[in-house]
Length: 260
Image (tube, rainbow, N blue to C red):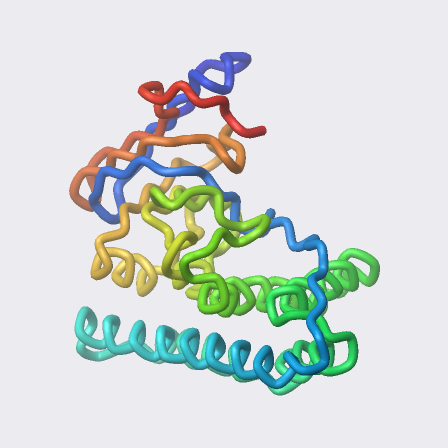
């Protein structure tokens, strides 16, 4: 349920069903509404080799995290279903995709962009192509690149704010109205999700098990219930044991302005 229609956004309260228990306070971040427009930062020619190494190291960190996630799921679900195993393999393949890696490295080599700027540019261009062409394969590629790009950026930006992505170091509450990917749940550091709030049917069972194993609170709303919150809102998520009730509301204990 939501607050009555027309109620002030700051007073909105959502009631749902807990998928994974926990109590979290954090900043909201809408999945698939990240701002990939980024002021490019250029480097000297002498720094190109170092920047390529920085990118490759971040890529390896993201691949290692994906492999560790497979191990977590294997412990939680001793006989991993074929679909779950394929999901994990697909994410690893996306991280290792030669085309997007070459695109990033080409921007570092040819345009002397730093690795972070190159990742942002590749994803922004994929999103533009998806909007112009509108074909399913273009939309899928942009969606996949957003996920793997977020994972790699975490390795690049550990200890720093991620422009357009990192809304708080206290924890991120992911909001989703579309199916979630494993990549959406993986980033660590400032963008690691502390909680997930989604509309009905957006979290596959294996991802729910993964969230439970990691202690990440998750709330599923009833069919047709909209989510009134915006990226930057400070939220409180309280989820009981799986299958029981859950509540999502604004954090009224803080006095700082809500980011629109």
